[in-house]
Length: 275
Ligand SMILES: Nc1ncnc2c1ncn2[C@@H]1O[C@H](COP(=O)(O)OP(=O)(O)O)[C@@H](O)[C@H]1O
Ligand SMILES: [Mg+2]
Image (cartoon, rainbow, N blue to C red; front, side):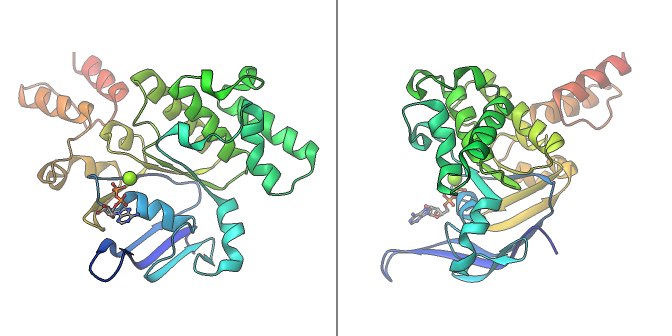
């Protein structure tokens, strides 16, 4: 049984019969525990709807979503489902609830009704995991966008979820903030074995994932390992390959012996080897 499973899932937003949007169309996918997944696709392809379906914020119009075997359509299981799958959204400013950073991170665990000592432990651990422990007594509004997003991640981490969805969580950040978030997320996946689902339109971020799902107009267009980043289908869709992939292609065309690469680090290694 997969950890997160979508079986023939459709979701239609309706504001009256005249105004229906079929955002997700008969989509099936499986995510295993510990996976590092990227979900990519154009604006409006249904990615955020899928994120909300995966933690029960939305319930499928048809088809079935299960998290660790729990059906998201079962209201009695919603609490457990949300404890298992946390979501970090795009805009950090909309995710802050308290005026003191550590209170903000404690908000989730407090709502779980945990023992104060356990809350303290979780808050400290979560803040340390995102490198924001020394800021714990400060005010969120003083922080940079990247720091705020790290606090939002800490707030989700404090719930000790088994999976974390980042819905374009780096899209409002500068390159430094972006890299910091990606490093934290990769470390959480590697060291804490947290299942990570990155929703992104940055192909260089997708290149860090082990499994990639490409959405198009509410359905899956492609899925597989990193090799799909080399697929011409991606190009036809107007989703640019990661910079390392396209530079490698140009170098090969220019006669250089460059193997398969997906990240800048791999490209650098191949160039050195080739020279
Ligand atoms: N609350 C909503 N009400 C009506 N339509 C929506 C709503 N949210 C999203 N949509 C529509 O559903 C489709 C998929 O949106 P979304 O899941 O946000 O895609 P993405 O995250 O890939 O940009 C789009 O056509 C979008 O306009
Ligand atoms: Mg979205």
